[in-house]
Image (cartoon, rainbow, N blue to C red):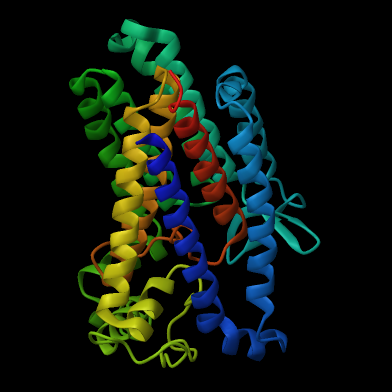
Length: 364
């Protein structure tokens, strides 16, 4: 039973990665030729990241996942230090006003992706250490919230509100499942609403995104441009799509066609059936991940699997929702499919850990 679940998870992830390879080339080749004179530019980089991801996935599969618990605090502090360092001019790379990456020649590293994984591991370890004390305010709720708050503050300074909200959602759900009192979580959410409102409406580009989400046609050539072009791409695909490689929106109409809005290009080229196929694959992935969680041999494996499945599924839900106009625009990639180095590598590491937990569940 567990072995079949593990095989299903590997198969689904492989299909998603293969779809990503095809769609990244399809959506980026013309843009890559125009900008870099090489239509394979993004595909070659993506394949390089994929190779690195496979190496780390293999390591995550063969190393006992319980080792992550022993080094949970160390990983958290390393992630914290990297988030501080990336904000320092000269160390962190600034792109379009955001300082989120370290740049090593042709390789970029986004520390917030590592911070997501490190914090999930830390929370899983914390829940196991505290036991019944997790229900108390000062010993069970405030410490993990302080850890979340410190990481969130550093990610907000990059700035990256989307990742902060996604990470906060994952941690709060983990704490709720662990037994933290609902009134503590609701009180935190209510207290944070004014700050979220301030973070959104005090920053012009975020306010513009919300207004564009409510009515993109108020500024069709400005803040509403991405949403409109994304919906045009999905709508023009019909049931069966215009054909692989025949997208019109990727011809400099839809920005970030190979990253944040690759789902829109899938909708245009492969149609409704293509998008439903991708959604079905993610639904099966989540189902298999939850099976692994339920069959974990220890509490740490249970909560670690929960956090990893939440992290991947939430990114998929938000990315697809943004492409369809259901959510405001956020810079979250589509797991295993979108172009992106750090995001792809850490999604694959998460997959490797899930397989590791499933493999340990095969034995009594």
